[in-house]
Length: 266
Image (cartoon, rainbow, N blue to C red; front, side, top):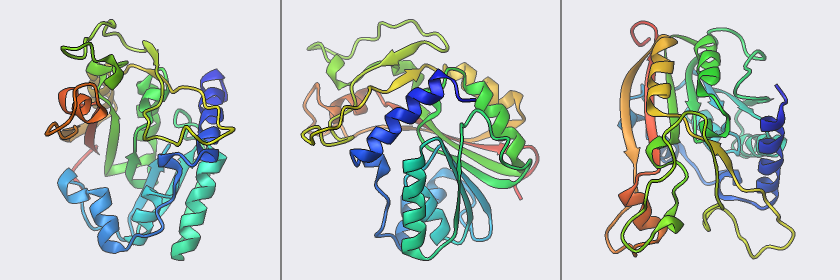
């Protein structure tokens, strides 16, 4: 499915890799304890012992989640559209002496993966990079096994298009229509990559709003049951209005879901 959306995201993420952006840096200082703390499985209610379990890091390249799961003994596959990100996964795997399978592809087309072949699909922030989340959910339902889990981190749709730069002296005004598939684009946050580095001209993220009803009803329709929901927010204490810390405390920018597929957890 190499359409314009795919090519835009692929080009952007290759540029982010070149710029050593935050989410492209492999974690090379993990041990089992740090890996478990980083993933936060217990807090999410995901079965904590992943040793021997089949894990798909979906659109999650970069040598971070894959390394953590592999260190905990999971059988890890990473699917990502960025060849550079997948190289980082292989770098991390080699560093730790673990095995990680990498597959270049689109989260909207998981035909390269076998049906019911994963116990856990781990999907970090990337869902809003495609226009219709339901296409992804249909693919996840095909590859996750009965009783398996789907972890999803995504944008909080109620604040789509807002950033700390939206501060107007009183708050962060919501003005865009709350509609599915509405496209937004805004500059990366300062902490994403070093803007002083020469030669890194990186396109802004292009995101599409996935309303809460589309996410929830889409996954219910595919046979998933919600087991956990949390808002990822910042620390308001001492944060200056108009700063990222203040914004993320007032308008939590991310949501985390855990879903169970089909029957009882295995």
